[in-house]
Length: 501
Image 1 (tube, one colour):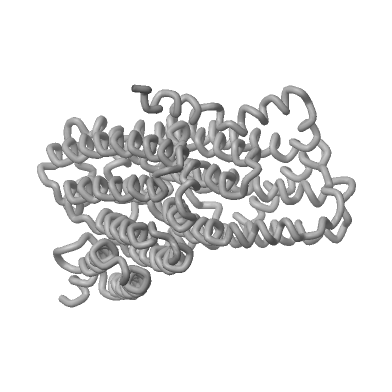
Image 2: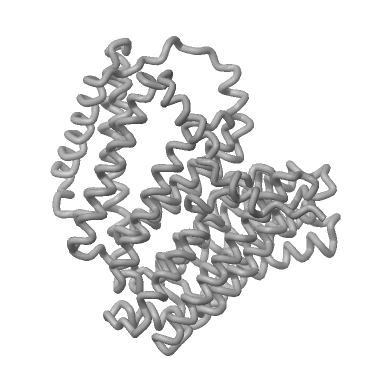
């Protein structure tokens, strides 16, 4: 009984800390970090209770997804609150900033735990308001106002799409209980109108996760304080993926919707990765990295690899929170580091050999670890990820690279392959009985798989060979276009700019 009440206390505690920041600003710098630590402790206790005793009866919806997200969001939230209390202690905006951060964390956790469709929708609306206010922490900054306007457009679109999806699912299944809808979908019940409800849901997820081209608000979030950027990239932007995982059984009943999600996600992943390579500023590069990572997350969900998508959310959140909060230290390290010498540039033959070796390492690892019987979707995803290993190997095979470097990179590549397969197996084992397995791929699924693997292969090869043709006039022109994000932000700025009186 006591464990069933703990999940409710976590968002209440953070919302109370947010209220204190507004009502008693002088107490905000001390109260917010303490509330964050207490929320993290309760979240860890709730997750442990789920692991030991399963989901509690009644109350909050505690399942594998929420049990993973609770300590993740609360833990990052605690770090962000502590960082904020230190970084903004001398600024007039500090207490209000902490207040909105606390309320935003409460809204995220409510969304994660929501037992009904309309509580889920209400949590999103509350989260949207908090994020909008956080964008305007420094309202005098023109770029901050522009980013806030873009976010308001995206948040409003998600609100409408999620409302339509909630209405369709509630009407079709005759209940607003998310657990009841999950159970019905798991048995294969597909009411009339499920197709458009699923499409509305995945489009809401796509927009909420800032996939290209509606990613301007995310890439310009750096105008707000760094702790907000960290929370945005490490937690809030994952809302789209969490929505899809909550309704995974529903989405499996509409294969066309999943294929659409995979194609949108794959395109965003590739575009985000290319734009990231052209960004001179660390934080802007990290922002475009998030666009790419969220696209890859949606590709995983579109391929029905739900356990791997949950693992991706966990890994990306921890990595990106650390990367953004330590970005200042990284800049100092890079600027004071001494160059070890010229970078070895791989030739075409070296790149071809590197890709062959990377795939060979992957195939050997798959058979050596007994993973050959995995779903084709999972094997294809591994092949796409292993292309990053090919980039490492290519550096070691470049003509100017010493043999010691070649050996170290080959060993690191093999270790990374084994680690990926081990994490993949662990995620799938933990998700048994909680998240659905990928279905046997049909013709549409195979088409998406082939398209994704081919596209990622071509982009990876182009990235590896980039130093060989980066000085070509067309390559330099393409770099300019990519550096500007293909001008989507400029077009949105022009469309959303306030009209002169």
